[in-house]
Length: 237
Image (tube, rainbow, N blue to C red; front, side):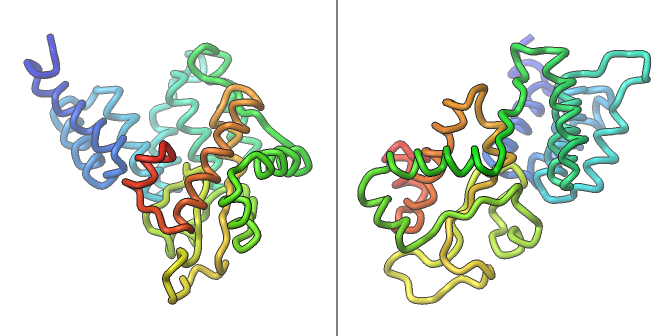
């Protein structure tokens, strides 16, 4: 049966699309509608928790994802385990989070990779190499707007930048070139990289380095005044 001929699967597909598009409130409503019609729909259960997590309702998300855990004698679902890791990471409980990422990897190693954890020195070394490889216009922008590494986005940052979620890789905070007013983020003009998220963005150091470069190009593109459509056209979306 195709989604077009199954109303519940069509609703699930609509919810998944809203989630992928960053419409988390809409996606949450759709997943909850689906669960009212099919309380055992596993994808909707996970999708609902993911939306709550991405809306910065971390304590609520932790309770919800743990309610989906199997009995102790049964094997966990790798998607559920990874999602609990994501929520714990957003709460700053990094060691607990890594245990769940490791469990997801143990159950389904082809689909769930281990985070590429880096020491602060290793992360800085990778960042220095990536910065040296950037186009000249970006390297010049770095002289005006520094890069700052943070472990994770925080709710405090999100209060000033409401479009971000706990899983973003980087963020430009400040005023793009050509605009006079400064932002009220507390950082001034800066590009933030979120180390924990970047470490989960690739299956190897090389892939993490590539994602770091893409993120820096994207965020400095914002500083230089490109909007999302222009960044997509440049291949930096």
